[in-house]
Structure formats: C-alpha cells, structure tokens
Image (cartoon, rainbow, N blue to C red):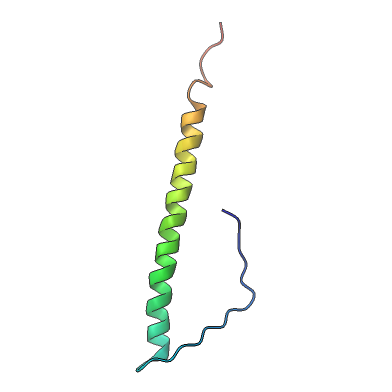
Length: 61
C-alpha cells in the first residue's frame, strides 16, 4: 500500500451537541476500519511471502 501524506485536512459538518466529540467518534470509527484493512493486507502479503519461500531452504542434489 503506498504511503499517503495529508498536508491539510478540512472537515465541515453540522451537528447538534459537541462537534469535537462527534468528529472524534466518526474519525475513530473510520480510522479503525482503515487500520483493519491495512493489517489484513499486510498479513496476506506476509503469508504470500512465507508460502513462496517454501522449498527455498531445501538442499540441492
């Protein structure tokens, strides 16, 4: 997965109540979903790397 750098992020929304709390709740929900997808992708890549290495250590005759 390529690295992404966000230089400026502006979010506007209207809510009843504490804007900061609503933003934090939504941000946490979505960043956790993104992190889960990223971790799954990394785990798949590691499994693939491991599976491809089977047999690399076998003695040559």
